[in-house]
Each structure stands twice: as C-alpha cells, then as structure tokens.
Image 1 (cartoon, one colour):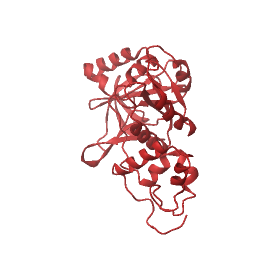
Image 2 (spheres, helix red, strand yellow):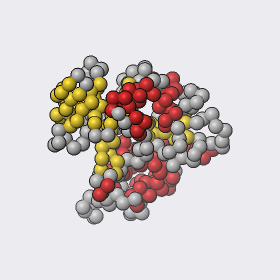
Image 3 (cartoon, rainbow, N blue to C red):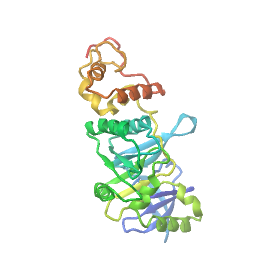
Image 4 (cartoon, rainbow, N blue to C red):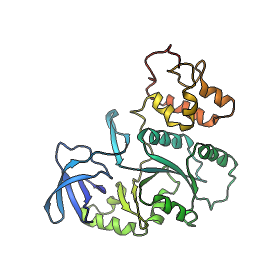
Length: 297
C-alpha cells in the first residue's frame, strides 16, 4: 500500500499498476508500506482482503489513549536534525529507542550543514551517537552535499525520515525524489483530493533503487507500548552494563549497585544521554521492569 487517500487506499500491484481500493470492514489497520492482498473490482479499483504479516511497524499516539500504525515494513529510520533550529535530542533519543525496540535500523542525518554556526556542543552530542555505532551523515538538501552517500545507503531498503519540524525533511525528500510532484499530482488526480494528497503518508520509489516513506507532520512515535525496561534497551550503549547491575529490576537511575550509573560517573557513558533516558521514563512510560524488587542480577 503506497498511500492513504481519505478513506481510499492507493495500492500498487507487482506489475506497477495503481489501484484505488477500499478495505473489508474487518480490516481496520492498514498502513503505508503494508503488503496486501487485493481483489480487483475494475480496471483501476479493488478491495483489500488481507494485510500480510509485517516485519516492522511504527506507531504513533491516537485519540482515547490508542495508537495508530504510521508505516509498516520499514528497514531503516533516519532521524533528521539540523544545524538550525537547535536540535531536540530528547526527540532523537525517543525515536531511536522506539527503533531499537521495533527492530528497525537507525541513523542520524545532520541537515543544513551549509549554515554557519558554532557546532562545538552539537558535535559533542553527535559523537555520542557515533560511539554507539549509529551512522551519522552530514547532508545539505540545498547544496546537495552528502546526498550521493545517502542515496547509496537508501538503495535496496525501505526507509523513512523522521525528526522535529523545520529540519528540512521535505527538502531532503524533494532532493532525493525529483519526480515527487508528478507522483503527488497523479495521486491527486485519481483520488479527487487535490492538494490534500500532499498531507498523507506516501511511499515513493527512489531513482537509484529502494523506497522512501514520506509521512508529513509525523514527528513523534509513541512509547505507549514500551515498558521502562524497553526504554533502557533502546539506549543501545547501556546494554553492555545492564547485565552487571546488582538487581534485575534496576531502573538505572539512583538504584543501588547500578552499573549503568557507575559507567556514567566514570565517563564511559554519556551523561546527557542518560539524563534524557531519565526524562523519557518521566514521560509516563510503564515503570515495570520486573515484578521482583529484591532479585540480584
């Protein structure tokens, strides 16, 4: 499935044809990137009869405490940040934690590198991610710096860009997909939604190979289905030390015998990353690590 068009689903067949489909009433959760089974009802129309098993899925908060699937079968998530506006590293860490727990590879894209700015603190923060083995690429959508390397990494994968507003995700998408406007116009004409089509999540085929899911307006992936233990697992550099904690239900905050805290104090782990880990737990994540509070690790 390549796009939601109001209540209609745009489905691309294996032959490359575009079908406008509705889904069976029992199918309530279909996302961009889903592989689906379709019964054709006309030359350009059909009915989605089944959603095939997903390898991965990204969720976002929805009304009533529920969640909604943003995209499915993503293999790599690139978190976009920029020299300006000032990076929201708490959001970066939240997205990375979700990716780690969803089995999605992740990396960081520093955009707008053509802007002059004091990057001292920014480069220190980025070094922590590089030390945790996250790829960190510097790009410029306008100057096209670093785009060849990015295009190479996007080949043969289904990827998605995420990040705070104003970092240039749309500019990067347009630079990577020169005919994006033509695809949007095609979907607009078929759906009758006009310009509103540009606000929906859409899967595009990249000229050099691979797919890119563009999801305008989506900046947050929810932690609702993640426990405190899941969040700790989402900070991949913590894992080396988690098994050394004295207690199995250690929260890695102010707990006695915490190896993670000891590593932070010794400079082996980033204190700023750990501080943001604490803030993510305070955002309402379930505090359940294990039921026992007295089991040595």
